[in-house]
Image (cartoon, rainbow, N blue to C red; front, side, top):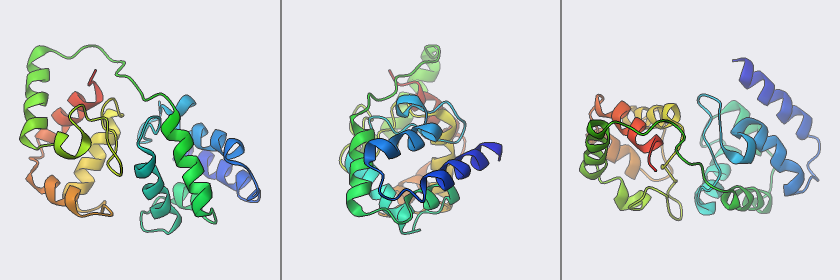
Length: 188
């Protein structure tokens, strides 16, 4: 809760400065999403290395309040399509995160790999889960964020701009979600 208040304060500081360039706005984004776009804050995703098209779509959804997050809705409010495109392109150019935790045990690796194959994650997110076009990069994303988003897709608490992820998530067994999140977050 305290983190959200800090982010809202940062949004408030940047809101009047609508004439800011992308380079001037980017530090505000990085204050929540982590230095170089790699988050170390629970619940906040790493954006570095995400496909620009994916980031642009998400920013439009936040700006138009079709995806609800108080902080992100306030941050994107009033920004033009060009502003959003510039922010998306800047984040996409940052080096993507790398798994930093200990190497997973062989059994967890095998189970996770099997679940990624079973649920066909690579068919949309690319074979190495690096994302493509409007599909996000999953590899080395925060484990807590991956688990929450998959749970939210499954419960339909998070609606995608395309219903494919909500449909796919219906197949995922609840017990598989933490294993998938751990495996994907530690994908090297």
